[in-house]
Image (cartoon, rainbow, N blue to C red):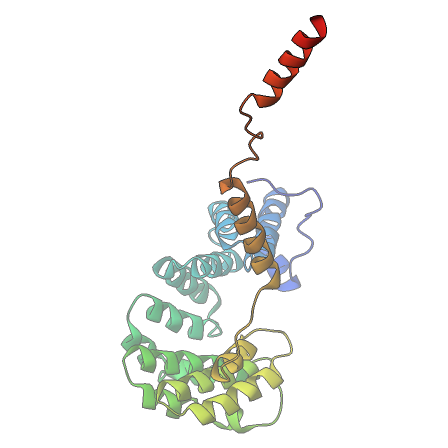
Amino acid sequence: MPIPEDVTGEEIDKDVRQDLMSLPKTLAEDVARNLVMVARLLDEEPEQAYGYSRVALRLAARVASVREAAGFASYAVGKYSEALAEFRAARRMTGSVELWPIMADCERGMGRPERALAMAGEPEVQKLDKAGQVEMRLVAAGARRDMGQADAAVVTLQSPELASNSIQPWTARLRYAYAEALLEVGREKEAREWFAKALEADQGGTTNASDRLAELDGVEFTDVLEHSSEDDEAEAVEAADEPADAPEATDGTDAKTDAKDAEGDQR
């Protein structure tokens, strides 16, 4: 797949570069450039990112970083079974537990929320850092909701991290998930409060808490540009339907009068 000339491969993280040192230099550079493209496109163009990840995987399937990148690319396009296989391979190579939450979420994506819930109770969770534990809690709550256990999802999200006033990278998402869970069990007033708290913590715009607040408040947004375009189109259609101005009808009277005048002149 085409790679822009400005992509050198040096843009990748130091840990990934270290991981690629087991490869011949030229091969490592090719793999690195493809991994850079995966990272660049993952959020905006996931299908393309997936394509670059498959190239990297074909070149270096025995490198943990490559398997992990392939897992994230597969996850982004909804290929959960494929993603889970890649994450498991990466975990076998590194022994790390940091992928445990997303592996559990893949189980949810495959329609197996009970397995995701079981993973939330495994010893691996205790080895996760705080961010990983919060992520695991989010996955577990999602699994509860998948299983129709909405009240249990609310309880699952109640934690010291939720109650804390400290703003962390995961705070907005945790508060947002809690608001969603509250809304599902009919606790709308509390849900609105937590959507507001999520918005307060959402410094990076990772949630649509502002839109949810507007919905709860009955506020409707109008796209002025869209409506303007629609109005212009309607006017154009209306104009096309109107008949063109027809020439004024005559009964020939003027022509006859002129002819008679000319005849009189000749006489």
